[in-house]
Length: 231
Length: 82
Image: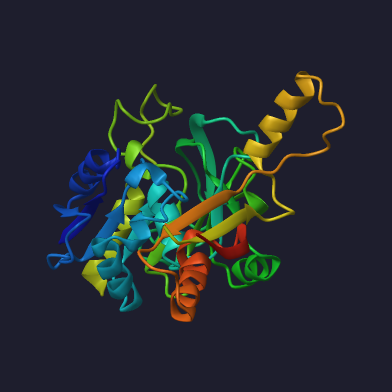
């Protein structure tokens, strides 16, 4: 089981994403933005941070990178792809997911442990959760306001393509409290909060049992391993 | 040097945080008549020679597909300058 973790110039969370993949039990294959070769990975993670200075729009230039073109082609063939934060922005700019992400409504960077509801578990990245399970993982962004046309929004809600929704207050002005989406096929998932920062005791959000004990992000990575093994 | 100028603006019905911050600052400076400020982008594409019809068509394509994102922005103008 090999999971690729992409590094663009400016990516911050590739090492944490790689660590999460290893903790979940898969082998990490580092993928470089200028490469076109996916190195026979079974799934890909586009981590958070920034990419190419986020010039033009967040994720816009990364969407044109050689590795991203290869990922888009493979995703259309069913390769599981997860985009976290800037990776989510890359997925919308690549048109693998609809809509766009704009500056937070309140104009401030936000960093907090965020409560979410998992609203769709029929995907490569959420199948290890219970339907409507409530989880807490860190959120940290300045451009996390999800927007889409009225038509797209209606389709997303109607077809159950909202994978994660914000609970206990909308942190960034996202339409319909949308925190994450899936595509029709269920192999592509993008979300603004960071599951890779909630996978290891001592380093996650505060849990009910102990401080920093939250591991709610781990099931994302366990899900994809399960989905590839069962495929 | 001949250039194609592409102008992109945030969609009218979306919040433009940059414009809002600038409008607030201008109000503080005493420009009370200003109702609203919106900030977009001007992108200059420099060419060695005067652009052909084909070049302009190409510019229109990249303006829509890459220089702007139709979900959040509109291409409001494309023109040529010397």
